[in-house]
Length: 103
Image (cartoon, rainbow, N blue to C red; front, side, top):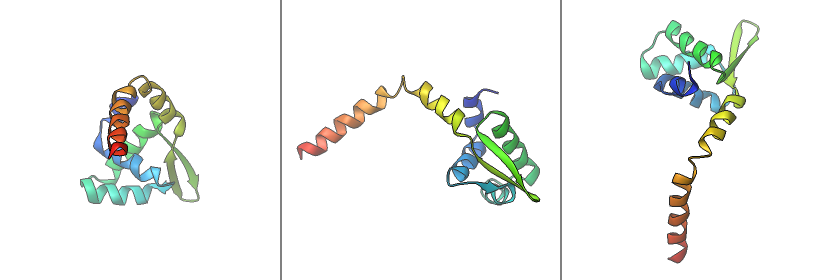
């Protein structure tokens, strides 16, 4: 599955947002996702698997717990790909900044 297909899912995007705040146990992630999306624990596990297999998340065992974290390598690849498009929004932001400086 292509990384943008993975990120196209709102549940997986939300999981990555949670992981951006730091390493999380699968149970903590499942609790938030279940509350926000009404998805079962096995469903959350499937989303975590997709994130791992796509290179967006890593997992490590700590005792009986599985800890998930963002894998920054794939995010850097996305950022590199987006670089060619960044000019489309930075020009507008630069113009807005200049407008505020004139006031």
